Image 1 (cartoon, rainbow over the protein chains, first blue to last red):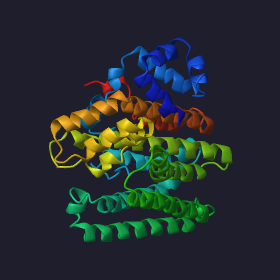
Image 2: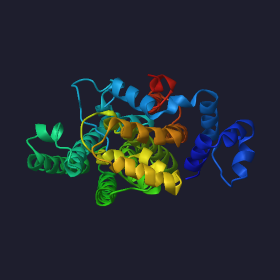
Image 3: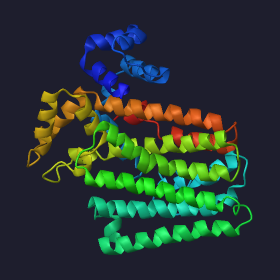
Length: 69
Length: 300
């Protein structure tokens, strides 16, 4: 469940989020967490863009509009 | 359980038509070097079981509108589901009679029945527990959706190849695709919280991945607050907003996107292990790409 813990920390601790962007290996290592390089890459690319894209409303609406079901 | 009911005749290639998942056994068979025609019974049995499971799932969840209502109510719906289960079983039995499949018929049938038992056990756990921890949510999602899609791909691939490592690759590909579908389904299930209908938060919202995540990561004081807000009746718009605000604040959306991305990457990797570049392999990869929660999807 490391991914859940890292996401929570990124979302609630600005210093940790900044440190993840500058030195993710160290930021994770200090807390004893380990993520795959793909997981780190995804989190960093999201942080660089805009975390508003991950708001619940923004995730739910397009799925419904897409009518994929 | 994901809905894979056909929603339009002749629309199997459509991105919006969930019946396209019934193509998985044939595509995996073809990508593995076999004749996709040999997978017809497996595809048909798999789709019938999926429809049956969907019907039973709706009845068990108390979701009696839509398909259950169209079938004449819960009693009739269960009867239809029983017919579908047995029809699927007859199709699996017919594998013994075909030259292409008779040597694998027993193995494939046993795989189907074992997978259904795993799915049923997970469904029972889901039904008999009011709340799921994050770990339990994943166990249920993997057993119900991951294992079923894994079955489709594994059985199809077996008709084309006997290399255990490659068969496992197809099996893993199906597993990650099934888990991605479950994540998307769960995100979609959050929609009712924005609806003004109903006094309470719907049960499937309370058992969603977003809630399981929030209750796993939030400090105790925030958990109590979230629980109180969810249980407040009648459900007022400002209370809904405050629940959504807590979910956003703790990163529930980011977590679901990150997990979907993780399973996308693992699915692509599994496919690379299983299948060299081929039209069928590319089609399988495109099915996974269609599920990606990319920027385009997440914009309003």
